[in-house]
Image (cartoon, rainbow, N blue to C red; front, side, top):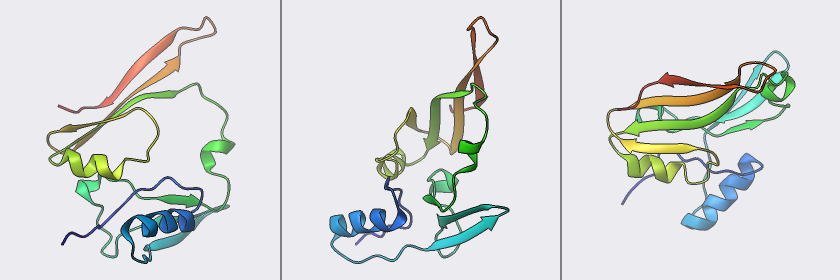
Length: 137
């Protein structure tokens, strides 16, 4: 028998994600979600009961914004994610947890690590600079 200690599901609400997963596994689930607030921002965040993040912190939590996400309130800085790279000793387990993540994500075998490539405009002429953050072997 296996257990799921953390899962990421793309859904409009946390409740919708739970219903989707319950339909897949055939048993009722109750996610451990913490209600959080900072200033005018409010959100729910899924967290395992012991607080440890699965797969060495590479598996993401599910966040449900109760207010507009702060990123939607900031002016566009022109920075774009080109690729997110995750390295883990168990790439299959992490890939399974990221099945509903949309975007340029690549998972490889190796020691736990996180890296990203982002682009930004270099000026009004339309030039683009690529910036590497972190390292994945």
